[in-house]
Length: 123
Image 1 (cartoon, rainbow, N blue to C red):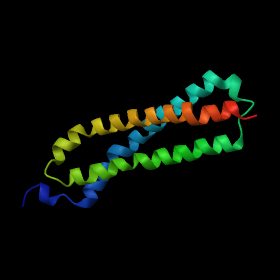
Image 2 (tube, rainbow, N blue to C red; image 1 turned 90 degrees about the vertical axis):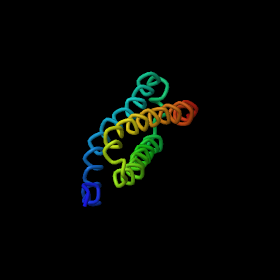
Image 3 (cartoon, rainbow, N blue to C red; image 1 turned 135 degrees about the vertical axis):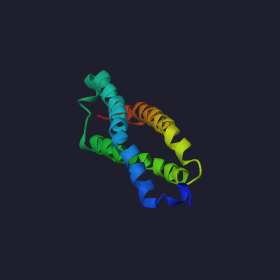
Image 4 (cartoon, rainbow, N blue to C red; image 1 turned 180 degrees about the vertical axis):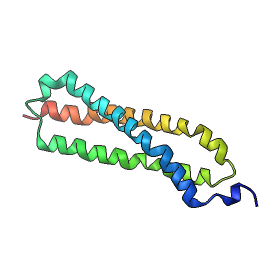
């Protein structure tokens, strides 16, 4: 029996959680930095229009961003159960980095194209 055959799903899942969950904090900080940057830059123009609905929209988007973060498990678990496990474990940081950069790009777009114009236009 090879070492690959002895790896249990529990071990794979534990390894995935140990890798992805500590990095979720950095992901959330990166996305929050985008929103805070827009808030700081445009605070003078948006503070009068800030509402419960706008804050609720940001909270909902934060929850959705964290649901999207869980998509990493969809890629990680099958790769860890494959014959490429060790190579994947060495390079999965690249998926994390791509995901963070993609999330930042989406946050930038969504904030600048959807949320900010709505806040600036509302009276």
